[in-house]
Length: 325
Image (cartoon, rainbow, N blue to C red):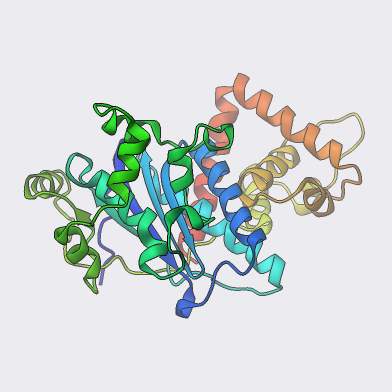
């Protein structure tokens, strides 16, 4: 059976969820929660993903996000892949961590955005993990009650502004989020096969007209999609520049090895390997030299459109190879 179409367009809102394989825990320590949030912030910055809410439960997570660039699949591949790599390194395991790619519910923001926000922030209470939302450490609820700088990365002002007609928007938010979830929303999330759209009939019809191939009743099939390995990137750079491995991995003093620098840049960008790890891969003793190579490529990409196009072609080939695995 062919895979149902994932609806992606600029400005779309989604409730994104993923669960551990066989319902196993995906967060085993505070360090895991913090590591996931660090990758989520990096993903937000790198791919222009607007994260408005999150809740990290022991064996699954919830996100409320908007995609100004219509690139949810790319964002989630980055997030899930890098966290899986981090988890596997930490606990010396391998293979997929999550049960599949992810589940994304397209949201009719005019009708249901705040209800989804409330559903996500109430998750720890409804699951019996906390008596009060403020007691749960791994959700964005506290960010909606705080103006501290650590929450600036959270895309919350637009949602807070929906309460701006009232005297105190934060108090209004707190009153709303502690209120009862509507029956329609409760019923939606109680369904075994969660629909791909939460919205009014007019919203669904509009989406259906725009995406004729959308299958409303089908669950998105699950598949294992991880971030590329350094080896996958190295192989594609070698293929693109028609060089051999020795030419890529070694350089001569005083002579720039552009393919090598591009490979270093892409490994850092997509695998999120540390500078020390990249140094080991490319036989570079000083991690500051790795950083210098990355910065040189960034400058050249900003100055040379043809080089940007080459790098995009390499990235596309790597991405295609990942989707086939």
